[in-house]
Image 1 (cartoon, rainbow, N blue to C red):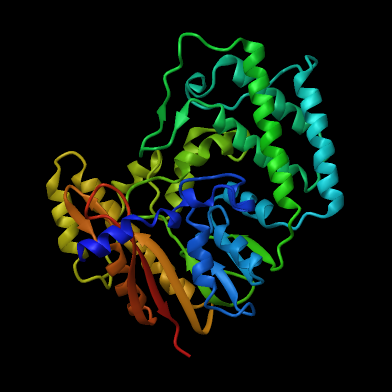
Image 2 (image 1 turned 90 degrees about the vertical axis):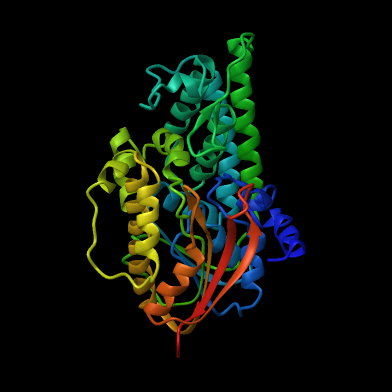
Length: 410
């Protein structure tokens, strides 16, 4: 790759999740696993609205919402129940009555939360929760949650819950800029408790108002969201286009960023559940998922020519973690092999596939995910595999993001 080409790739920040800021429903709850709305729109521009779009790793619902905005119908699948809920809430067409009720409920929630009549406040069983929120902010969040629990159950409540998720991270001390969660240092001089309470309530009000405003614009296409394992896909109808971005083979556990939301909203009750869910996901290594890797094995001959030799290099590169990471890489691609075989069965003849994926590096050994995706696609019968470099990912000169394309034969 020439220096000029590399420089152009470095400038493609608009193709990351950061570019979704301020763009309607895509900015309701920003998670780093999300990918760029511009990238999806660019891909969709090549297809007629009559085509059904499938995203088997739907995450926050970016693909489905983009598809519906451009008139396509879309099917989204994921394994995480919180992400299923979030994608459904983001892709739902709210009626004028529901929008009006959401605004009224916001006023009611704030009124109840700001009062002092709430008793028996509940906070989630997050380990060392005081690192996440100081006492006053934690109390204010608990008041908001209790106030929302008292509401009658209707679809517009999701708009308030998404605003609550937005708020609990904005007012936390947590940062997700690295593979492990880090926490800001709390300054010696802090706001008074009452001022911190008001900061939380103001943040919640601002977030919910912005979300309600975005919900007023309807989607022209229909989005269906299905909870399903990407290795064993079962969907209500066959699709014509696949646009997706699976978890990267970089041992970045996606559940680490979702845990606060999942605890507060009741999707998780104890830590081991996060590890169990991550073990079911492709590429997951949170908690007990890591220990289970130590005993994982698969004797099938995977159709990737160089995986065994590279896995041995990774295993021998580090006495402590080399073997574990070697196993992690092999399991990831065995899982993706099952995924490609599964998705082949739910596509119409002539269907197009676009997979956005990044390569990775362990102890200086590059894992060429984009090439191995191509080999797996070819092995299960997809044709015309093409790999395009999208952008440079970070300071590591070996890491890039790619679009791996293919199509199903007629």
